[in-house]
Amino acid sequence: MIGTFIQKLKLVIRDEGLRKRILFVIGALALFRIFAVIPIPGIDTIQLANFFSNNQFLGLLNIFSGGGLANLSIVMLGVGPYITASIIMQLLTIMSPKMKALYQEEGEAGRKKFSQYSRLLTVPLAFIQAFGFFVLLQRQGIVVDVGLFQTLTNVIVIAAGSVLLMWVGELISEFGIGNGVSLIIFAGIVAGLPTAVSQLLFTFDISQVPLYLGFIAIGFVITAGVVIITEAERPIPITYAKRVRGAKVYGGISTYLPLRVNQAGVIPIIFALAILLFPQMVFSFLAGLGGPIVSAISSAVLGALSNQLVYGTLYFLLVFLFTYFYTAVTFDPDTISKNLQRSGAFIPGVRPGNTTSEYIGKILTRITLVGAMFLGFIAVLPLGMQAITGITTIAIGGTALLIAVSVVLDLVKKIDAQVSIREY
Image (tube, rainbow, N blue to C red; front, side, top):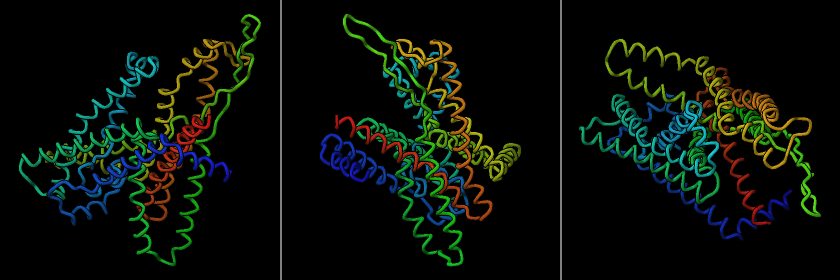
């Protein structure tokens, strides 16, 4: 295994095309980190530090911004507006048959057009989120109250930073390796590791060593679980019918259709967090408007979301539902059944057509249950640990670990696929 790894590493280094792709990803992520440390003007750093230390919501939102929110940088919204736009577009595929046909049946051209609609929707969402978040920061005293012109300028800069980051992510997906948006979130998580390690070293307590060891052990278990569930497959046997053309016989071979236990990957976690964070941002904004009814409703909603039991239950349910939702959108048993029938393939003991589609759908539903339960469990596990230990940073670290492991696995697979293509 080590010899194979070294051989593939040499191929990565020697192959010019693959090397350029990897260097492009590194360069794009370095550019993103430069953007993430350029702050907007008029920040009260003391108020910012106090606000972040007492607000877990902003800690989770900082994950989506790739660490840019902690500095109130020009890319403080990160890829959040683009993720929100993607969720809206995915929901439209269920509500609109035309959007579903565009995404699933019109091939690569349809998917490109679908992605273009998502990018266009990101622009107004970025402006709305930028204005709401900037006004919220002003009311908290984090950003110095400035005139209308300066406020509009900052809103435009923040929205433009989010659109720019979306563009960088698209470039990574096209000219680099891996999913650009996921890699940007991953880069923000990794960039926060030195700060987290330094804080741990400065606050190290020898009496808490068993607790630290327990956290490390649970971290390894979660990592191993994510790897196992991500790599797990349920093979469905496929046989190609024999076809005689002239003196030659084609087909008759047997293979299998691999169904992954977790078809959705890390997307359910990202979608669930986006859905949980958006109402918190909206109601935090509404709470300061001054109307007694609006303020009371906003305070009640924010109070409910700050309850760990309510928050954890919603988080689990959203991860569970989004796992099924995203799997249903991206993997259509009817399309698979039609493709098998067109190519002269069939599942032994199962009739082609609707029967095959129902058979695949039934298996997919069962194995997705395992993946959805597992993802939901490890998503809320850090919240349970936080309730037991009282350490608030665990919840953020657990979510970050989940995203980071999934992104790394996806990146390794895509690099391995590029290496395999060049080997042949």
